[in-house]
Length: 253
Image 1 (cartoon, rainbow, N blue to C red):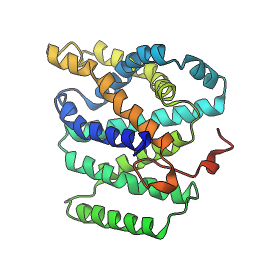
Image 2: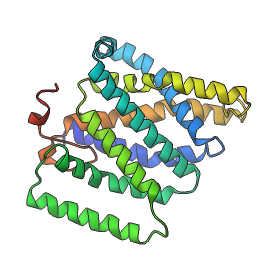
Image 3: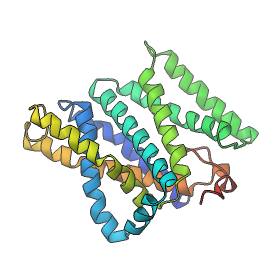
């Protein structure tokens, strides 16, 4: 098992444990939680980039509008996914959120076949069919239309597709996406605090600590996911990330 598969497994294990974390913050509005994730994640990236480097890569992307637009699209998609997930967890919709991430690999396969022109072997189609039947059985037992599940699957599989086409190394790529959201996040939280609706500093010290820890808790699995997306070869796996043959991106690298 190579580093790509290990990082993919690590990312989903961490994401599987994160609902316990976010449930402790259900007294904070979901949009504020997302804004805190952006701000504290940005602060987390500063020492990481200082240690491993990457500032020059980010500066280079800022000079290429097309590449910058791709990272902005990724930032919007992942923040939209964060918002849906945090809202679902803090509003007692954990089962539906879980269903969304069961749907995500199927959505990724769909994008790989329809958008990237990837071809699956017969055995892979059988595996996809079994997975689809399993997810369909779970969805059939749900008592209402699983709109959160579909929303999460759509936004995260689209995020994987955009990330696959990126040219930055994983760490600078994630840092840039987060920084692109930093000013809107700061502006929103400043407005909320001015209206005395801010969560940070108005609860107990444990809540403030959990909000500050949202940076490392967000960065670690995303970094693992990005490494997995870039390292796993598509024809050997149908996995959590949207993947394609290396030749599909030869013009974009």
